[in-house]
Length: 276
Length: 232
Ligand code: SF4
Ligand code: SF4
Image 1: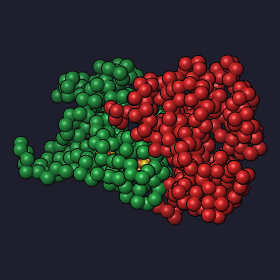
Image 2: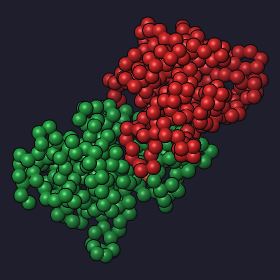
Image 3: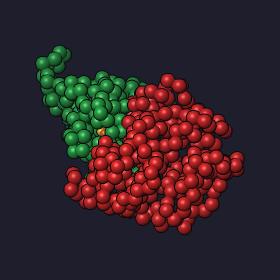
Image 4: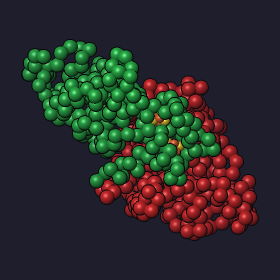
């Protein structure tokens, strides 16, 4: 039998609702309030890290791992969370090329797991875990086998990849924001375009991260942030004191986040029975 | 051997390293880790002299066991008897590693044909692959062990029950089953460059794979599935 005893949210120190204090960032990120961007900016500007590693959208839903070292670079990256960027090898190159000694990484739960395990357990002399200072994981319901998915949007809805502005995947629906408007699809319809690997993934929030972040429908304009250790707590507190983040208590949304986590876990268990 | 019980500093773990067949990379890694853990660990390792105790809190096995050598097999069984926790450290001790390719006929011991990981002979509590794992890995291991952090150590506990893991298993279990998400962790983790991502999926250059298993435990998909299945 599979072990489901563990808390699906992982270790939780605090849960907060946050948004950027900076008006520019807030305007760019209306739905989430831009808290992640503001937190990263705080790390960069207060010299807590030498660079931020994140994914930048290139074409369609494809992305590329990039390093941001300034405010301008950071604002230009506007994260890619729809497809997995083959992060690992590329990031090592980047970190070594630019000789970054302390980096913050924004990634998805599976990648957070890898980086965190590398940081805790350096199996190889060539590992660079000691350079990873903060791991921020975004909530994730899955990523797409995007070639097939893009074809579907183009053929069925006449939305070409180039017109897609944003995609939000939630528990029961998917919203595609495109130049001509918004497309809201029930999750059933797009289910088969999720990567099979994501269908057996049990981690919604990123239990291996230092901080997990994501938005919920009921709190538009705010980002839920879960701190997982004292280092993360201090980081949030610092960002607030230095005027980067607005923070309020988030204990009332714990239930919703837990629901997301349980749904994803249940989905994974169902799929493991059939896929494995 | 003259065991002199009682000369261990209280509160320190009594740790024994015994090296079987291998290149000595792993036991050197243990030795290199020692200065960083000497405040919590009292280590007996061949490099530093004779064994000092009759029993140990933790035994670290490095190297694979030659099944054609009854002395080695017996020694390993003996270590199990005198140790509370047995850790297989490095790929030869955990999964067989490159020793899997041995076929005998080689000087100085042409009679030695068959090498196995420690868990083919005894029960192992934690398996830490790597060719070799870094000294820092052992430092982390003892940190989490002393904290009793089961969650962090679960992966190593689960793979202690697995005798063979390699790039071949990764391809079979994760890539061919369609579960690979294309993150590239395996490519980054292979010490011999046996894995290349082609069109966002790993491809194995078979003759380069030394069966160390690093890619498998580093794959977020493989490691979480193996933990779920092995977690009962
Ligand atoms: S592919 Fe590489 S990392 Fe994986 S078992 Fe083979 S040698 Fe080790
Ligand atoms: S680490 Fe696993 S999921 Fe990631 S690319 Fe390799 S096989 Fe695929």
